[in-house]
Image (cartoon, rainbow over all chains, first blue to last red; front, side, top):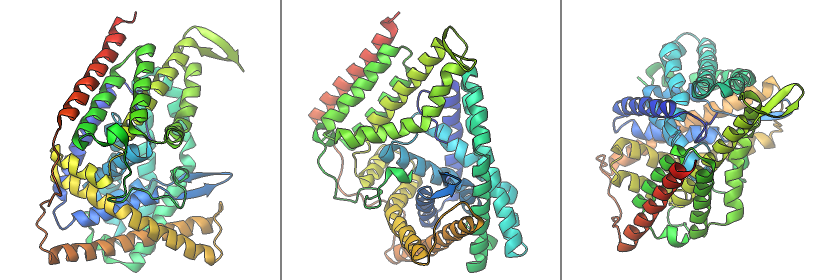
Length: 203
Length: 262
């Protein structure tokens, strides 16, 4: 899902960077001193979760779990996911430098939207109901990310259009897997630490 | 991304563990970050193939100066290419233009091939320069340098926490995976696998949040006020300034080649 340097047109890169900076600023505003350790440890957790490879048929996919990040962090998902992307680019050579803004926006905006749509529902009802909403949030976030990656490519050149469409359809199984995993993760969290989503650290 | 990391490898270097990185390693960390940024913007702005090739050559030159092992470094760079290969291979067929050859009724165009080459050159040049200039910093130094470059303090805090706990949490993850393995868990394409991985992620998050509560109490206990007690200061040396001038000259030369080329 990482876009690399040089693939996008300048307006897309600059627009993405400005929007991402806005999102990060909003996210940082919600982070007071008491919540920084939580956000930092969760940011590290999602970095580690992206190392998990889940088998699918003969191949495997690595997790993104941006939906779960959004559900737990709210707007703070912007800076938290940005930090992850920055570290990936600098120390692993994944993604790019000038496209950091676009990549952050593509991953964090659907996460925040998932939180706005499903965040309240997860803490309500039985744990299973919460898990179903969580799963929907997880699928929604990945679908949003894939659509935004496709849109960023399509806006940059006609030639990318077929690749962008293919990327979207190739990710439908990934959406299903992320939905199931997010659902079960929420289910476990609701059972083990019920106050997590009820109180909400994203508040 | 797991294939980027063998189990024995550390995710991020620990403080004080960084080896010497030649000329690059002696530069001011702030300067290295700014250089990587300038190089990225200049390279993305280039429009002609010779200038892009020169930019890639410059990144390789930086790698030579940094004394990074060329093999593993280039392999990491190539791993990203594996990621984008698919898109690059498709481009010649999807960009309209003068035909090179036809394959199963699809026509590859010179314009598309050119665009794919441009993206490959730019992406590799920028990411290699970034890994050489900034990736050789100790992660903690990166945080301090960003702070000195006036990044928002809370963002730097968040970065430092992430850096500090990635390795801790990866160990926790490996421990949980080992526990699953000794109970006979073999991942496959089935519901049981997805449920188990979901619980694994959920467990990691619950533990992470409980850990963060303990961290907060420990910090409060020590009277943390939100300020950074920074260890040491950065200072630009005369040598840093010389390197900066040469580097800016080379970047201007890249832009010059780009403009001069027909």
